[in-house]
Amino acid sequence: MLFPNCVRSLCDAVADLGTVDCELVVADWRSDDWPLGEWLAQAVAPLPHRLLQVEGQFNRGQGRNAAARAAQGDALLFVDADSTISADAIQRGINCLLQGQAYFPVVYSFHDADHTTGYWRHHGYGNCMVHRTVFDQARGWPERDAWGREDDEFHARVESLVQIRRDEVPGFHHQWHPTELAWKDRYSERGPFLQQEAAQLHVAAQQLRQVVPEGDTYILVDEARFDAAAPENRAALPFVERDGEYWGPPMDDEAALAEFERLRAKGASFIVFAWMTFWWLDHYTGLHHHLESHFPRVVANHHLIVFDLRHPLSAQEG
Image 1 (tube, rainbow, N blue to C red):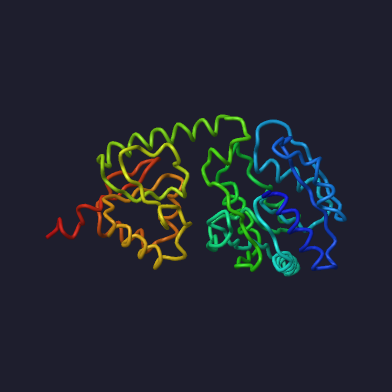
Image 2 (tube, one colour):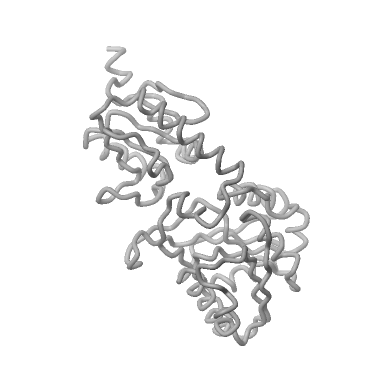
């Protein structure tokens, strides 16, 4: 129901705005879990829509570029299929484009299937509105074989061209679904990119086994993407953690430091950053400085960065 909910929210938002002339363009890799031809036309009416059948291996950037080429308008709104959008988000985007800006709204991401709790997802730039001229100057979306950092690269390209507005938008939501890469990529072929990532997970898990002793508890910063690759006989605490589940990234440095100390008090002997979360160390500079200042970094390579919490540097110096 993720994408039908997205379509329904878009239609409701356009109806609320009243004066916005738009169309829906969907890039589809011949999905068969709920064939779009069976419901999309009726769900989107009376809005015009185009359904593009894309061949080959799933590629998020390729699909978005194809949709942009097929769209007739100059205001391009890119929305993830698992999001639901509001009239407020669309209007803010239009206002930004009228001022020569680009709009990358912050989505509220739900934690649970009942959609009762969540957090403002300040990382990630997959949802946005840009003018076609800016899109063309940015050379469109990078085309990669699976979920990756194409949104970060696209955001950086746009930011080099125009001013970007980014704010929290009421009614703009990311629906809950499993976060593991295996779930996200379950309908795609295991091309070279996925094979490389699986190999990285294997190597990282092997290194983790060598560093963290059996029976120890450690903090795992991986955005819930390690999944079954995490080594056995060791207890991993997700960061941020609520009732044993990953609860999204911290709101700011203060929250990151507080969560770190809370998990450390629960007996964590290491904190481990997997490669997909190395950006955290650049974003949460206070946490990074605290770790570098107080704990020895025992691993630093392309797969893992690990700090040993058992032997604080101040204790060693004393």
